[in-house]
Length: 72
Length: 467
Ligand SMILES: Cc1cc2nc3c(=O)[nH]c(=O)nc-3n(C[C@H](O)[C@H](O)[C@H](O)COP(=O)(O)OP(=O)(O)OC[C@H]3O[C@@H](n4cnc5c(N)ncnc54)[C@H](O)[C@@H]3O)c2cc1C
Ligand code: SF4
Picture (cartoon, rainbow over the protein chains, first blue to last red):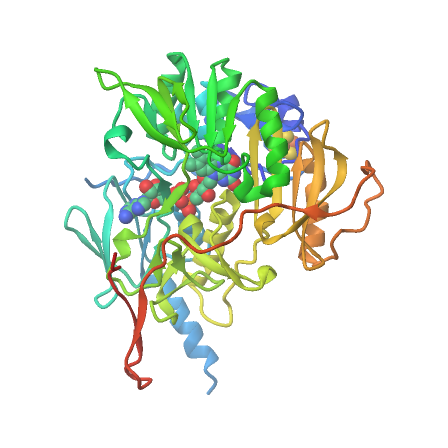
């Protein structure tokens, strides 16, 4: 699954880190880093983390995006 | 009969049958496509991108990816909805014909449009000497491919990395080098890192931060040349102060160039400064007249900002790409008076040396700065920027929670220095000069000339530059 965190919004409350520490971590006091493409097995965990984020900064796939028709 | 009914009918018909083309398949392009569909656009949608990849996110490239935590190809952006588009990836747009309303592609195809969105962003400025730039071990960082190569080279543990340019990307890469325990030299022409975006006062703090973490930071010097060995691998750099640095890996972090060349001859107000547009994302033609069918969003757009004296600002920030795309896409399938304005309070973040740097507003618009919370010594503080007695921006180091407070003050055009917050206040709140470089004379002025006299024939036109 694909995720992105809007780090303008993120206020380093670390809720996501508590709930899904394999995907989210804090480096230093408040710089959040994350795995943008976590394993599908972690979907539930990541969804919980996204729901728990007080500022709704975590954006998840809502469509599989499988629709490419590529030229060249 | 009122006009309302036929116009509503027009909009309905347009949403059902129009052809929209988006050029640039990255953050702004994808979010615009999703918004078009969310707005009920069911017509044909084509997305053209010169990179062979589906839209991916760039900020992780200089952070997680370089550290080796996340592979470069794990940065694809999440999809907010099905966009049902004809994706043309791996092929560049080479021209925009506004008379016949076609986008020309590098493979000879022509894609017709009723409305087109320009979202071609920027690219990395390359090391200016092509022979030196071609040396093995010399890198730039803008794309997924760049990041993958750079990460590999870092993982091979070079004996020293030279970073040229201490803007955000250069500083973040220097930080990663130190986290990987690699020796790194940063050469910056200005007096300190980040002086352009944040001014000299904050730059000094950033400089200390780099030195404390073992970066060999050289300010006020330029790199004059790069030298390679017999096998063509970079080995050393000559600096403008006649010193030499032995480095087997070099990152040129020299800022960005807007991707506008493909618009040459289109008659749009497009140049080194970006593509001029109104606050609704409608592009200006070369005469400064707003167009009806060409729209712009993201890093390549340059629009007036009401909070900053209507100055035309190009904002190379992630949230500007997202919000600009959403507003512009809405406007692409609606008509006056239902347009939205893009009234973002700009903001960005950067993670380096374990410190979370965040800002809102436009710091270079300010000329004074005041530390309003926390402690500079602990690198945990908030500072506000002022211009003519009002607050125009704020920056925080590891104090991001306070940023929304200052964002509110900026939006309300509150006085500067701002009223004391009454919490975690430093002893000295007195404003000092923020030390931004002189705005000075632009280095490359486009040659636009006026021709004709009557309103019917009076026109602007680009003239090739005489050198
Ligand atoms: C390493 C790095 C780190 C960053 N970190 C941060 C950060 O921490 N915080 C922050 O706020 N911002 C950050 N940014 C900036 C942010 O990534 C950009 O603001 C954002 O990517 C802009 O999106 P965009 O869609 O406008 O342009 P881009 O992402 O530049 O996308 C434009 C796309 O158009 C394509 N294109 C160009 N010309 C053509 C053509 N003629 N035909 C077809 N396609 C074309 C390009 O190849 C590209 O894929 C960072 C950027 C980089 C490079
Ligand atoms: S829960 Fe939300 S605000 Fe908190 S660290 Fe995670 S993303 Fe940031």
